[in-house]
Length: 185
Length: 158
Image (cartoon, rainbow over all chains, first blue to last red; front, side, top):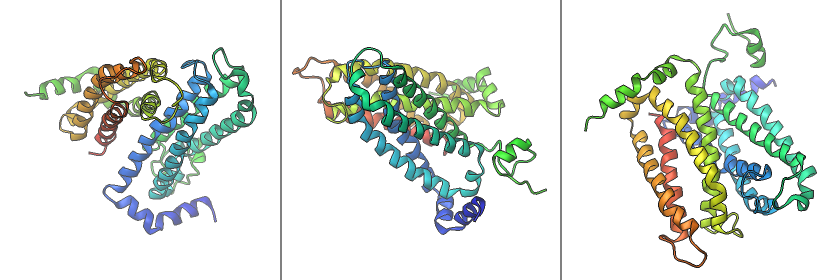
């Protein structure tokens, strides 16, 4: 089954139709998705700023990570649940959205950065836990995280706009290629 | 008090008009508003969680509050710089928009609360009594900020 067929089938499901057509459900799910950003990105950003040495240099990074990561993870779980519901409500258009696709690619990049940090950098935390300037790899991971997650928020917000939608032709060939859009003429 | 002339004036400003006439400016400014919001959330939560006895509970409240303060102020400034142009572009709609007024009143209250009561609670000497209990301070702060967030998101739905 192709991706498109998969999302077309999703759009036929009664859940999808109910979410899409309900007066408040979609807005509430979307609001929770946005509000949870404050917990998720907020805790990540403070951690990244700490890694960069830009805030609370006296607080050990290990302490920061141990105490704030549970909140980051809780935020992530809520973001994934509400995010899946948002896709479920509008499957085909979202699948073909250039911003949704960009967001998914950047989510993979952000995930790789998390993996790199926690498997390669963080095990040596004792050496740069308090004060001073952390090694370059630590600061790079922090800066990358800030930039990539900000771009994810950006592209996530842009999914709402229909500039590059498949049903708004003509579009440049590159746009139709990136959105797997086959315009019917 | 008739607010319409003032809101009409806001709506007619060159900035408001430029945003309305552009395809992408509103979206771009709004995305900046959102990134600023998320950062602001971190700077607030790290202190409010601590006041609730959660998060970085081994650190003194004053240390966290002082560390977070410049980022809180910085993100509030980003929110104003991005939020005011968004408002100018749809000022007339806002005047008759219930969530907008919830947001503005909550915002006014929470800024006053943050820079008076909450500031004194977080900066008080260990062992001394602050103007409000820690938990109450955190709950009021989170509650008022949620009013701002609720209003902000729902301006767009009505």
